[in-house]
Amino acid sequence: MTLTQFAGEAADWDATLAAAGPGNFYQSHAWGEHRGEMGWQPLRVVGAGEGTAVATMAQMLVRRQFGVAITWVPGGPAGNFRHWATALPDLLRSRFGAASYCRVNVLREHQPAAESQLSAAGWRRPSVRLGTGLSLELDLRPTAEERIALASGNWRHNLRRSGKYGLTVEPWSNPDAAQMAAVYREMEGYKGLAQQHSEQALQSMLRHLGTSVTVLRCLDAKGTLLAFRAAGVFGGRAWDLLAAATPAARKVYASHALLWALTETCRQQGALTYDLGGADPVANKGVFDFKHGTGARLFEYTGEWEWAGMPLLGRAVGLMMKHRGMAA
Image (cartoon, rainbow, N blue to C red):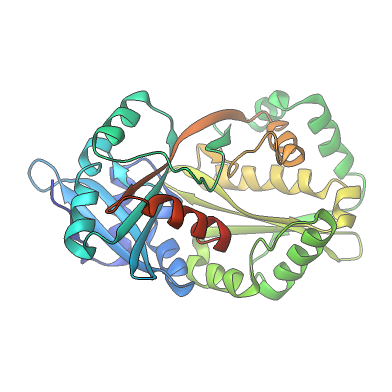
């Protein structure tokens, strides 16, 4: 299969991507434009199967560093693995030469057959990974009563407790990136975290994603912003994108109220599942326990795979991507 550059409009890309399946928010046109503002160059390619039907698609984010063309494919290409496992390296060689490196992060449940196909085509597991390869998924198809019954007793208890503090959980129709960044900085300070999202990145995300992202905020009884959470819906799947809370939010269980409301909103928007955005049961056990307490199912992605045009590129580029936070 030969991959060719996509020449259509944004709506055409998204419609074709949704049809190719499975739903992948990080391959949406708007996400590529957002990452383009953050220093990546989006390159969208398609490959046709029998007749004119599109068999595979990939939104590739390209950046040059020290003479190497680094390509990142967030979410992973659409379509069957066998359609792109060989075609993608062929495209990279022809377009960028030997000094090229590509990493995909396939956000689909692990399949042994896919692993065999990727290995046979020259893809390898990175020695330096950017994530655990695990995530948690909520099934949104049951009723609200059925879903809350699947949550842990402690999670249900904390959700009920959140209703005792006069909290307001509402859509944030015109989210303010500066306010969002301030909540992130406060959270990072008390948790001892590195910067999660800059104000510039938040502004870019809000500007490019527009109505494809839903942001809810939680206010206390005095109208003070305590926390916010955001998700995107694409192809029948919802994706957890942003979440930040102040120390005061923890005392009133604002995060429980927010996540419950946001999953219900995504359900109303047509999402059948909600991907909680990765899981780390060891290094980030508190967040894992919070997400897992919702009744979400823990599963393993097909995850990260890399291809390099020259030996030794993989580890060097992987270290740079992890150090500089180049993914997402």
